[in-house]
Amino acid sequence: MDKLVIIPTYNEKENIERIILKVLSLPGSFHVLIVDDGSPDGTADIVKRLQGLYPEQVHLIQRTGKQGLGTAYIAGFKYALKKGYQYIFEMDADFSHNPDDLQRLYHACASGADVAVGSRYVPGGKVVNWPWDRIFISKGGAFYTRMITWMPVKDPTAGFICYRRDVLDTIPLDKVKFVGYAFQIEMKYRAWRLGFKIQEVPITFVDRTEGQSKMTKGIVEEAMYGVWKMRSFGKERS
Image 1 (cartoon, rainbow, N blue to C red):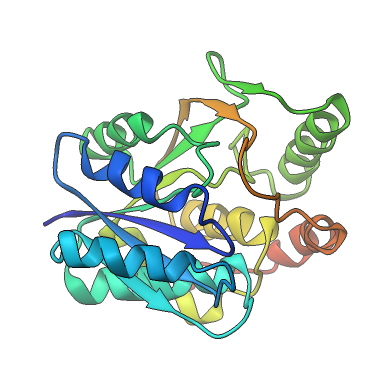
Image 2: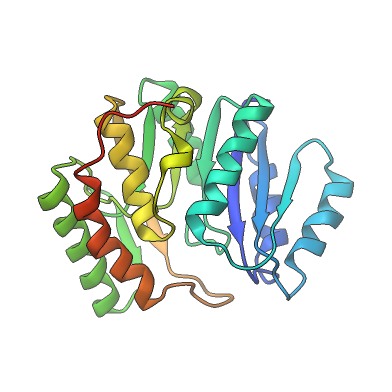
């Protein structure tokens, strides 16, 4: 029991059973933790049914209302640390991240990286089914982030990640400030400032085919302004 995949959900009934079963089918005994923010479509009920079939591998945290991506992952990180997992993953529920790539992220960390990032913007990485304006915003935001923070990560908003346990043990999780894409930047930035090794692993990111995107104007604005605040973060430890 050393690998836990954290998947935040809100109205993912079209995807949730397939994504869980796919992760459980991978070699290497991956476990799954769903953090559901009160989905009215019954997402959590599907997870509970699967828990009955896979009580050791499938876990669920239910929260009331939409509280944000960042807080969902922080809740998941704390759960993983409490339960003793050594490799903790972030992944979307909508198959935009290929579950097969979990193995590649794991092997990157098992081979010496502290944080493995599934990256769209390193050689070999790509994006499928995104409109040009979404790609422009994403790549522009990545460049903007690097220019302000000097963090050597080409895909700082990526949400397909493997952390070694000691990274999450060291980052002061209760001080993490942001909840959207800025959360993804902040976690990488804090890890980098603390001296952890970040390795980008090329992936193919495929836009969702089921359900609705959670992207909002507020999430983009939080990332734009948040990176300036991050420069003041020191080498804080838990």
